[in-house]
Amino acid sequence: MPGTHPLRVALLGCGVVGTEVARGILANPIDLAARVGAPVELAGIAVRSLDAERDPAIPRELLTTDAETLVDGADVVVEVMGGIEPARTLILRALERGAAVVTANKALLAAGGPELFEAADAAGVDLLYEAAVAGAIPIVRPIRESLAGDHVRRILGIVNGTTNFVLDKMATEGVELDQAVKEAQQLGYAEADPTADVDGYDAAAKAAILASLAFHTRVALADVAREGIRAVTADDVEWAKRTGHVIKLLAVAEVLGPVDDGEISVRVHPALVPADHPLASVRGAFNAVFVEADGAGPLMFYGQGAGGRPTASAVLGDVVSAARRRLTGGKGLRESKDQRFPVLPPEAAVTRFQVRLAIADRPGVLAQVATVLADHGVSIDTVRQTSSHTHSGEGETGAATLVITTHAAREASLAATVDAVARLEPVRQIISVLRVEGA
Ligand SMILES: NC(=O)c1ccc[n+]([C@@H]2O[C@H](COP(=O)([O-])OP(=O)(O)OC[C@H]3O[C@@H](n4cnc5c(N)ncnc54)[C@H](O)[C@@H]3O)[C@@H](O)[C@H]2O)c1
Ligand SMILES: N[C@@H](CCO)C(=O)O
Ligand code: NA
Image (cartoon, rainbow, N blue to C red; front, side):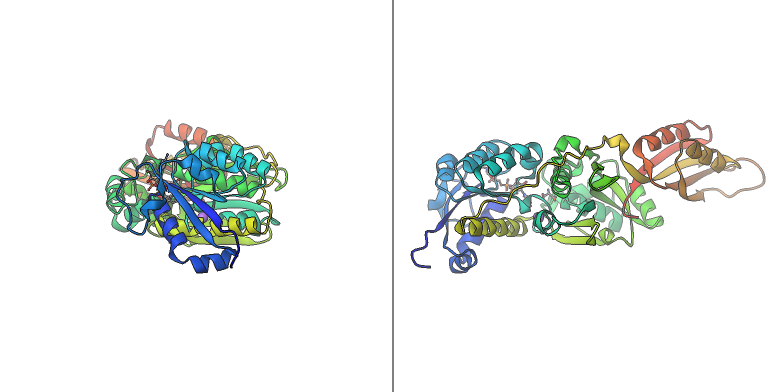
């Protein structure tokens, strides 16, 4: 392409993802130029320290600690340094100067997306973020573009690889959570401080992004009800198996009521998923997003949600897309106008539940428990009782485990029901309350 002005890419951050993005841009310039329609030049890489040890494929002369100057000369800015600041300020600076921005930073998008999207709209440039949700899996673009003419009803996502690895390990090896987390750390999945993964913050940020896209509504991190996997025990995992389920940490985003005038519920929590649901087969650190849309029906997107090369694949796809649009003089893709669906408070969410409780094993106890549920308007789907002692004649002979699965109920009704059941004299313990999704 003689005479074509090269597109200058500024890379902010050279960690796990940044290194692979740089390698991807440098590896085969002729191929990349053919895809874009013009040469793509890696103008520089902003780093914290020039002396840190790096992959030998990264040319040292590209490194700079002056991110501002690098941003100012770029056509496309790739932000893969993470965190809120200085990422936010640098992205705003890039957008204001008319550069397209590609980011993998879900924490920043969930915390301050509207400000960034408004800046991109005002400048008429792209702000692309395929890598921010479920890494390599194309899910942002399919929801934003391919499903733009359909109505998405519900999204169920396994969007955190670390917790899926941990829950899978617990299911296959019967180990407790702490041991599975240690193994995830040894394998490099979980951070030294695994809080963002284990307590569901990472998944909640992704849930906010997915819900915003799917429902054309701004959903902030604060709107997402969040419960991590810390309370899940090996016993819960074993009982899940016995009742034909697996436990997954799910990001759930759904519309309740009419699709053009409904309310949305966005939440992250461990859930029992029927063993025959496609999400149940997502093993190890893989991710998957199950989407239900009015016209399309069910769709499943599956793949690697983390790791340098997989995440860089999504980043590079966005770089090529932004670069192509720039070359043709096209304006950046706009976000949909805000439809302002109200976001329901957590207690208004509607799900099915499985309650496991220890009861005195004597006549009439099941009826007592069932009456409490009926009094609260919570309908029972199935009941399973397992005695730990055998009956001999009349009266109490031991303890039993009761597993009750309900039909869909409001979270608030269920909480009140469980409180009332716990107060019944023959109820020894509420062992666990888990939501059931995908049934
Ligand atoms: N690693 C993954 O699997 C993955 C997957 C999806 C999305 N992401 C997102 O991609 C981003 C990067 O993740 P990562 O795993 O590569 O992290 P990382 O910690 O390996 O890399 C970040 C790099 O940015 C550098 N950095 C931080 N602040 C800087 C500053 N002010 N100036 C210059 N450099 C700075 C750090 O020194 C580090 O080298 C994050 O937003 C993360 O959430 C990562
Ligand atoms: N910590 C995240 C990385 C990708 O966002 C995970 O385990 O999925
Ligand atoms: Na993705």
